[in-house]
Image (cartoon, rainbow over all chains, first blue to last red; front, side, top):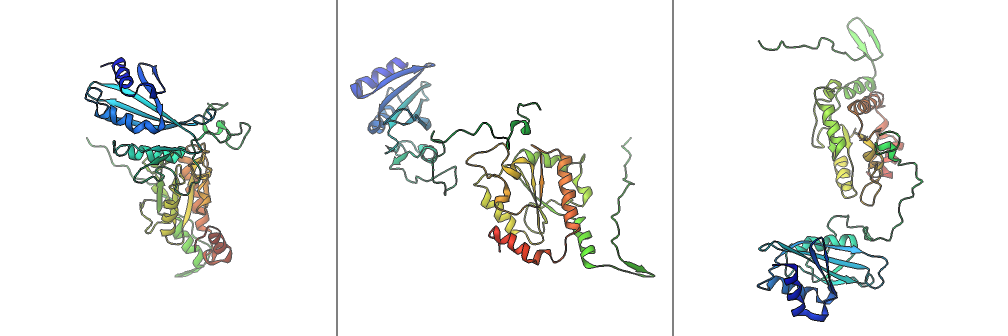
Length: 170
Length: 187
C-alpha cells in the first residue's frame, strides 16, 4: 500500500474532478472541490483497499490572499491497517464558509468541527451542535482568522524584559 | 538514634492594641481587637490556575511556611475563607467562575492578585485571557513578578494583614464601599 496506489484509486474513481495531488514529506495530499468532500471521505472509508477509517484531525487554515477560496478545511485521515496517512483539502470562500459536516461518517469530527467553527467560522452543514467549544459563547468574531493587526511592537507596558524572556534580564 | 525534636522558641506575639489599662481591666475599641484577631488568622482560599499556583505551594511549604502568619488553614471552598488568592492566568472563560467564588465568600473578604497574569493578563495579551482580575472583582493587593518568589507572596499577605488590621468596622457598610461593589455589579 503506497501513495501511488491511493492516487491511482482516487483517480479511477473521481478522475478529473480532483483538483490536484501534492506530496510533501512522504504524505499525500489531495485537493478537491468542497461539495465533494463527503463523497471522497465516504469512498476512502468504505473502499476495501484504501480503508481510511480513522480521522486523525480536522482543522482549517486561513489564506487571506487567495481570493474566493480563503478558507481551507484539512482532513487528516489514517489507514490504521496499513499505517498510511492522507490529507484531504477543500477550499471555500470566506463569504459563504459552508461545507458538509463529516460527523455522519466520523463521530470524532464533532468536536474538531466545533473547534474549526469556533476559530475560523466555518459553517459545517448538518453538524448536530455547531456551537463554540473553546472560547466564550459571547465572542462575536473568529480569532484565528488573519484579519487582525499585529501587536504594536513599540509598546512598553508589556515589555519582554519584565517576563524573563530575552531583553537585558535573561 | 532519632532526630531530636526542634521547638521554635522564638514565638512572636502580636502587639497589644492601644487602650486604657488598670488593675484587673483593659479597655480598648472593638475595631482594634477585631482587626488584631482577623489579621492574625486569615484563612486563604487559593484559586491557583498556573505557575503562580506552584509558587504559592512553595509558600505554603515548610521553607516559607505561610502558616507562621496565621494562614494555616487553606480552604478550597468559599466557606469561612477571608482572602481570595488568585494565582495564575484567568481566561475569559474562567472569569464567571472566579466571580462566583468571590460572590460566595462572606464579608469581610479580601482579594490578592498574585503575579503578572492575575494582575494584568501578563504576557498573555490575547483574545482569550482576562487582562487582570480587577475587571471582574475588586482587588486589594497586587503581587508583582512572573512568577513572584514566595517572599513576594508573603509580602502580599503581610500587606493584606496591614489592611485587615487597620480596617474600620464601618468600612464595609460605607457608601464608598457600596459604590465600589456597585461598579462591579455586586449587591
